[in-house]
Image (cartoon, rainbow, N blue to C red; front, side, top):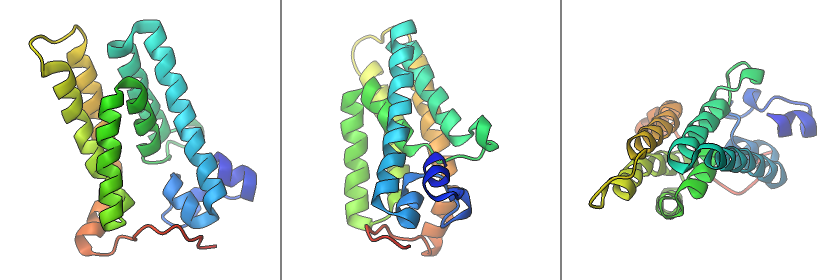
Length: 187
């Protein structure tokens, strides 16, 4: 929203898919605007999670900050609670919280998008994998660390938010009307 407003004097939520995310910015304004949007989403999540980890620790502070960041991205107070779908912010938070989980999540996303060209499907499947990997990471061994349950609940909530925000995409996928991703600028 900041990029579309400052660079083009427009509200991205009135263009294309009406979503404030990187994919819609890419389709509407091109690579430069999409890159700026993506970097901004990533930086805010990384900073929030690092602060949470520093203040309270990774399992409580880091995961709570990640969840707060995704909620703030999806429902931004300053923009009438109408934001993006939380994918880039969630991915950046996952990278900081659990690099192994990030590798699995990003792998699922990349393979899905390469095979189908549906960013939405890649995002949903990647989000669905995150709580599974989090559970495996903290409960797969002989004993769980204190705070593991809280981390899993946060991971599950982040996943649920991202998936729920993609419900219109899932309907379009089911009806065969979802747009496939292209690196070509539409404007």
